[in-house]
Length: 291
Image 1 (tube, rainbow, N blue to C red):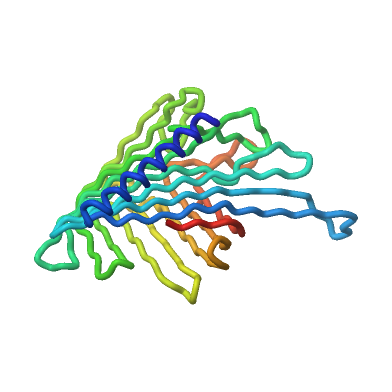
Image 2 (image 1 turned 180 degrees about the vertical axis):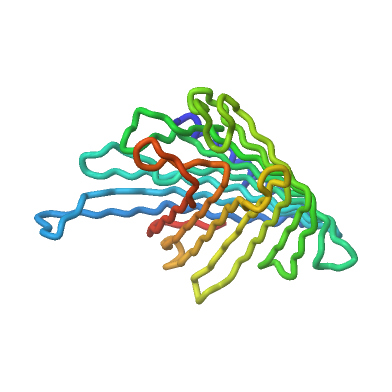
């Protein structure tokens, strides 16, 4: 795990360095990023209403490196997030674990707001996940699962704060590299299979807005419909982030994620499984550095 974090840190630093160098030399690269470490802590002593001592921390790293020249536009986004949580009497568990890379190339048409674009997206996680509070039974890990998406379509960008991308033909691929995790089927895969491919329509919306002074909102939503199997069931991947700047190095962050995949069955009580919306939100205050 330590080696993985070290490698990812080196990769991030290299990307920042290369992007900054290109920005200085060619004037067609625009680079910006954000690194933050947020903490939450609760302590109780003789508290009649009850409560459990807890401590948690989340580290977040975002990097944008974009190219624009003439009619060509190439936007790249890299995200790392990892968090841990400890409560009295329980083992340390994960509260956040995400790796995401998004790359979109576009060629401007006669209409300056419309681009013919190709998109690539990759998502996975860094560390093993367990069936908490059981910390022995692994249910996920690095490249278990991993998601890849490829799409070609039309990108409507009325401003640098909004992008609406529609692809009538796209591919969505799910990989589970660990045979122990695959088992009887996981993450929408058939029993004993490590790979699933889907073909369908894809829509992606991205928006940024300043809510009030020093409070920024960023949101994106991905929608996918599988042409070949129950196209009326739409897969949803929605992220919302609100950054609240306190001063030059302190900030508060609210992060919300919603997932729904009709092919993924969620464990319920007993041995039951069912289709459910997955929802997660994080809120913390901590150190923040923008570049």
